[in-house]
Length: 365
Image 1: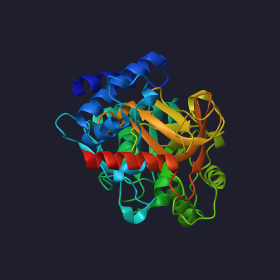
Image 2 (image 1 turned 135 degrees about the vertical axis):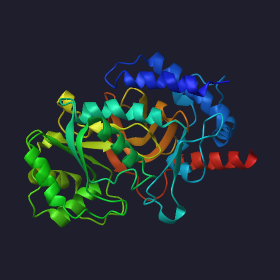
Image 3 (image 1 turned 90 degrees about the vertical axis):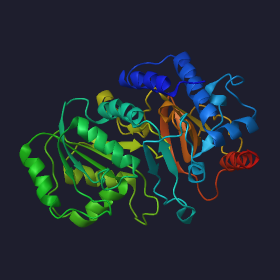
Image 4 (image 1 turned 180 degrees about the horizontal axis):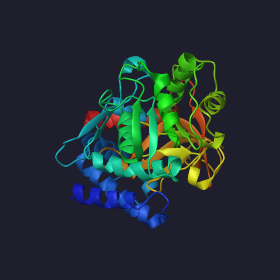
């Protein structure tokens, strides 16, 4: 039987060694097999899917052959891979993609693993050159939004790297009364600042406070995350970034896009400041997050540089399911992820088949 705590301790140690460490393929393979064994043993709906697919820890030879679950499955199943079934936190998806079908649930038995996985990639992408930085957040605190994985992550990294912290939005999306004064206070302090927000929160900032002085000191930077799902706004990401650069006074390369999702506990960033990359759309994943682009019908791996449905194997998801099939489209070149957006219309056939297998297996179980 897999020792969950021992496996979690090994992963935490590897994560703390840093996202810049080069991992041998055999290291990832061994850890992925250990994570899969834990999930097979302790997560009933996932084990049922694996058995239906004829895949067990004894028969699987490569991590890529471990069955993946569609991200939509988190709306219908509680994936808990902990021997006692206990969880420390449940994060909920926004529910904007499919509306009335409800919100996905990501149960996390060990928050310390999430904290360890998010810390160094964030540091390398956004604060590689400073020990502390003034933080302005357009994302609510985790107290105001207790079911938001993004709010939790922001609070964790702000607690580590923030010299001061300004929460500008409450849990209902309402602005605090003195937004301009808070920008002014950070500006008077003189050091570089970090602004964190979703794409939509920056659009709202532009619409409501775009005529005010929101400029920040030299060396400031921005993390922008999330898409424009259901926004109804006629603005591209490039246009939004141009406004951020002009209004906040940050360098174009200091506007960093974070790609993440509730169903994953690891994130990707573009550009990565310490590498001096241009904003080319190439997102960098930490070594404990493997990604492939798959043919939307067959789920076979696409050729290098060819677009497909993105599929992630996240070792940080030890307590749930690590292999997650998204509905996001991208291409993989030189190990970096080039996002192309989301699938249009109907669920990709491969995702639909994976969901059908999962539900049929659950009925038989």
